[in-house]
Length: 390
Image (tube, rainbow, N blue to C red; front, top):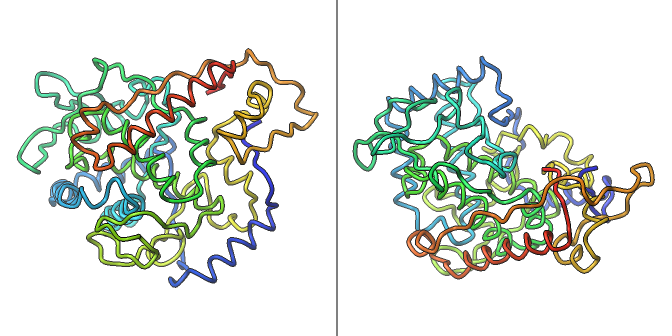
């Protein structure tokens, strides 16, 4: 049994979503919508399109351009509420350029949560996809879609990676923790650091090389990663937060839906709802056309994260209320009694190092707070005897 959540029926959620769209949406509905898929689900033909388009974009200088753009605006698009709308628009711009080369291209995402226990063993790091760790003294990537490429920004160099822990990357953030962030966050000012300083940051740091630098779009894994981060935002938006935009802007003012996206000079409201305006895409696990028919439990179940029965059997009510406030712990009798011994202990997450936080993060205190939150979460579940099936 996966994640169940409380309160709103499917019809009620549909009415809330439709009402919010009527009140906030100023963009036309897309005439057609294409689907972003998890990279491991691409067919051979789809993967060949990706390879061909990527090569053309490299030859035409687009990798260098996106690496340059991300570098120039780095301080304005991290550690505050521009983070999600900018990166949604940024990945979409990449995808838009790619589709001018071949309209069959859609940007895949990498669901890194599937690989959180042993990231370096992910199939995404094999030759058929993104390739693996860098080799030799300079950490050059020697297989995969960018094998042999010379990246030209900020200067000519091979694509580099340097996996942490001597190539054996430690555990990332568990599905349970990410689901907890989605459930506990009611504002963008809560949700943004919870994701930016956990899964988002650790993937960049642990892959290393180009990914751990400001021109990280040199590595195509950047696009896979940020498409997935955007997918998590879309899941949170659908759980009653469709038009939620608050917190600080990069200029110190309070951000709103009418604030312009950094660099792109268009209001944030124009990228808030998939299926409208320029955002004519959806995610394979979260089809837009079913959205108004789905309840909150269906939306959260898309995270493929939790075994509610195991949580309810092990965690006391105070911990459930603290870490999973929207979790419905009523277990249908047909499921029987869950075993407390099933699954594996949640590992302590690999943490952002102080050196990286101090160099790359404007909100260092916020990053350390999330780091402590994730540590406390894992310790609480371990102490309670919870075992994960993931």
